[in-house]
Image (cartoon, rainbow, N blue to C red; front, side, top):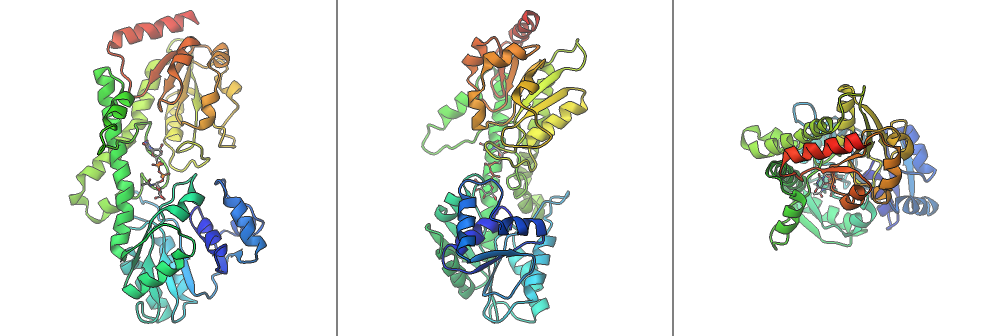
Length: 426
Ligand code: SAJ
């Protein structure tokens, strides 16, 4: 009943199915039965509708059913291999209640051949039934974007890959109940690979943008402008640079391809390392922009989530940057309007006496920050915008020295002189 299982259950329950949402976490199960869920636009209303209609309930117990959908985590282990223990555990509990004619669908993002070589044997051994003759098995990878799950779950095309055509056909019928887009049929391993390719494409593309950001800093040009110009070409779609790639998908899934064929995947490996290097790049530049004469320098970090307008902090590069700065003796106070935990403070508290505003996540709420009000509380008005999301001219008009990731000043010397001038003014 996580990020994918819950909305999938809710959509099935509001489209003609009776659904039991299973999770090993009792408090999550209780929360769902009370009609509460993680923040995702439109999801809570749908959940409450499903509960009110009596077609959905959550439980810690796997029960007999016609269809089983597995949407468990598949985290990356240190060596880049996938941890498939949750897939195995889910398979074992399904096998204990599996009956002839049932359909099992794996939605979790998985390394190629997981459906065929990991889930299939677990289901068969425990149940004594045979896939393809006694029960049916398919992979149908989820591909919704956190923040747009309700819309995308209904309108994204889906790949449905069965271990045979009967399995594919049954899975297509299931998803047709709520998916208004195309359901494209293939085999299970191609479906697994297609899902991994989507996130690998994005990861390599972001790495290219990050490499170009470093080159543009070296050349003294603005990478954001250069990318926008290049993207005017009808067949070019470069992504955006930034302080690194976080979340539970893009920095993880491509490694499952590397894991099955390490010698054949130097490009994916390099792209992953390049994205990771952006954390060090931002830390180094932040340290350069800080004063080194008046005790511990102070930074107000804006954003801790892994991407804009979410409270999700999984593998957030903003968090890594904040930790690394603290390790290096910088006093960091973090603001994040989406994340309400002890790691964050209100804007006023973060900027009071600060030497630098470090913008790490482009939450929409940050567009209304008032540079004049912030400047009046800071010790030294310097802004480092790693997302190119704040209006540079407004912050400069308020007296800030502004540095934007990927935007080099031609003369590094002039740059240093400007910074020194701002520092001595304040
Ligand atoms: N990022 C950049 N530059 C960009 C775009 C993103 O630096 O141009 C960074 C973000 O700041 C964030 C990270 O990449 O730290 C990942 O964000 P994201 O929006 O690219 O992706 P996710 O992880 O939220 O969701 C992705 C989506 N995959 C694709 O768009 C191909 C989503 O559709 C998948 O369902 C999801 O992975 C998943 O579960 O696999």
